[in-house]
Length: 356
Ligand code: TXA
Ligand code: MG
Image (cartoon, rainbow, N blue to C red):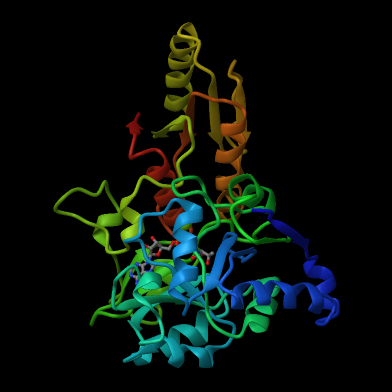
């Protein structure tokens, strides 16, 4: 299949709301005809289809190679659409929407009959999000109906934060890609489950536990996402159980004082080089190190976890393109957006953490 790539500059769209009407109309027609369009959001790029069309949803699973029990999140442009797609909506949902929408937060609610089981992965609940990205909003408005969209990567690969990542994974497999700027946040939305009596966070994101607890102090983190899941401890978000966000290289997280990490690396790198392994490091800017390795990525400052979050997935992809065998990464604090960073990092590492 020929994938059409259309370029949209968010600055031009901001200056003139009608500037891209032709392009957006074309993208909306693709969705309304049951096709697939990848589009930017503030979290990561999404792979969109008509959320009410079971055949369109099925195409998403096929293009990504995604297991069919892993439900899709649906995207809206207006808070009033909530009532069309969800039922039994608790008051807290409106409070959360008021505070955090549009933005990087997904609510799990009981689904209405309009959402087919192909979209909800067979569940009777549905994840709903209203993104803040201007291009996403203009696109969703043109489509009119909710757009189901997982991250636009091949299943298991790091989520795409730039259009070129989407092109890497999806060119030739989908109808259209909207090529826009780098995602502002760079990690997927926080998922909060409001379908049970006490709300819980199923996936940490830029809207942190601390921020949500200001609305309801009882909100807690699904215990299965804080450590390695096993048969007794299963994450409630089906997608969180898969090894995910995974680079091709082996990723190892080093936890502890940087002096100890440095000493460990000096020994370990020498050993791995003897067996011809290509080594890379992921470090914060503060932890400058002199060492002979194939690649070092300084992903941001420890004083700006937003910057680290923003660079994490693209860094993992770059290291893949550099044919690295082993990546050692520094570890980060588990609070605020740090919880989302550590969640993605430990999953990408397959829970391979060395305490030093
Ligand atoms: O930021 C985001 O949320 C991005 C952008 C494109 O909006 N989307 C995204 O979708 O990350 P995806 O499909 O890559 O991840 C959705 C996660 C999966 O882990 C899935 O299992 C979970 O949300 N999920 C979706 N619907 C659910 C439901 N009804 N109950 C529990 N978990 C659900
Ligand atoms: Mg994903």
